[in-house]
Image (cartoon, rainbow, N blue to C red; front, side, top):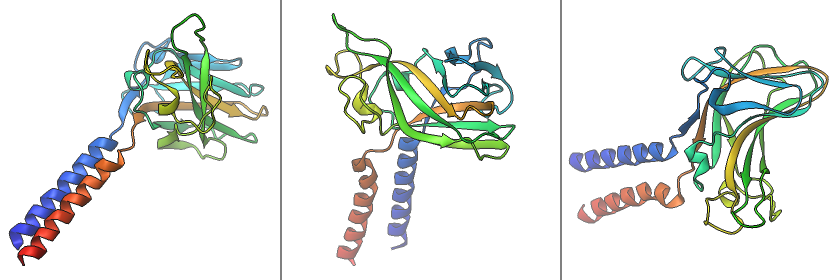
Length: 237
């Protein structure tokens, strides 16, 4: 019996390790180089500056500093350098990142979210500059000074830029060349910042990762394995 429980313990450990591996996020952007255009990120919109910094670095020694002037409201930090985990869909369910606030935002509201840009499938009517802005976001207003780790933005709800279907996930909207007539090809990744126009905003972002939720079958595998072991124990008892 002691041997049986040892086997079960090993099985549980294997399942947990497998689940952790499936849930492990992939590093996409850490802003280490080059200093004038870290990972290709630059400003998108008026009144926003995007530069490399060292404040708030949680992966490596650099971070992405984004500053928005008081009068600006909806701007972004955009890159055309699309990480393979984003550029070869499907497979991305959420974005993780770390954010540092040095001076709490004094205005009415401020938030950060994710927009993915893309192009329609090649052809005579191919469209560029298409975008899917995802509904999930993180509040910046109200945060005290400090570093906030593992902020999660779910890429689960956006409007499809060509079919206009609502509530679409990244994996439903985006694809690769030839994957489907309505699949959008990723061409850009953006953190968007929406805020009130009554105060300036500065935040530092680092350690941007992409993540995938395990398939239900993978999550149930462990339960089936352990159930089989326990059933075998009862039958042999």
